[in-house]
Figure (tube, protein in one colour):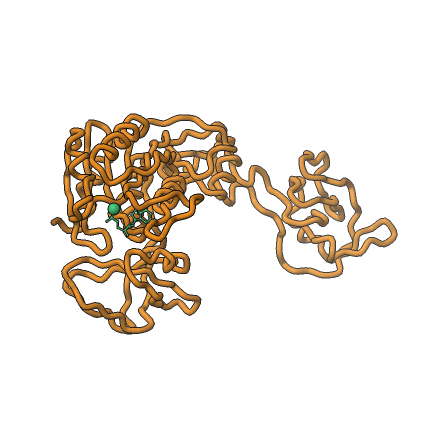
Length: 390
Ligand code: AMP
Ligand code: MG
């Protein structure tokens, strides 16, 4: 049995970066950006009015002004604003030469064809050229996962198509004679296969392509047949179930029979002790215990960082420190144990009702996990602890 850090290090040492491809901006959400992106222009690209109003000289605010031009957005002002003059201007339009402020429309009164300023705020109401971004600035780092805000930045610098990491195809295979698909009615001794659907959703969330291969019964022959299919159709195969010490746990044996080199078979974590990681050429295998929380957690802790790293992605989970509301205790201390928590509105970490590795329902409410280090029985109230947001 190895420790979690060693298991993580082993897995990550195999994460060779995949190649890139170009996808259209409208298809880029959730993908991993492959290259650094630089701005091709200043932002704003010109001195821009932040308000609908009148552009004028700030030294003229106490005088009635003559309106000389109307400037909509997308129009290049033709006239320079002189003393005693103003130009009517719309939000987002270019501030004309000669003007150094914009008085919002709510603060003027028009009378006898002159513009009178009735309230002064001291604000210029101008967004200055280049105040957000200067041409040539790096606006995005390779490795970020593309979110809606990233999409906006890519669009604003004209990056379409977008260079992204190719998506590894991650095959999912469930093992367990007791399993039926969610659409089927289970008999008294059957269990609905939730892991495969959960894993596919986790894979997609990680920016990869999920491929589901079905349920293998707990026989070496059936697992072997299904594994061969999954192997042919994916870059990485995730198996759930069949990795423990039971009479019908054949996954490690079948992997080995297929030439997979098992790098580890047991990790000192809870849940997820009998976790298997194997390599065959440029294909990778994760065998995870079948209890839904085990597959969920193992995916987040080992598989997701691996997948992201394959695509050149870095930040996997957000980590932050927060204090524990009430003391949390446990009896056995020989494994690193992960438990679901709720980081609540008051900023404290609250324990959730959690009955163990079959209790995936606890994770509907959970927004993070915390770890009990090996050897520690108790995390006392008030302790500041690292929370991994999931
Ligand atoms: P195993 O790791 O095969 O010993 O399975 C441990 C527990 O997880 C058993 O109660 C299984 O019925 C359950 N289980 C295994 N595979 C799945 C699955 N795909 N979906 C939901 N539960 C599962
Ligand atoms: Mg099983």
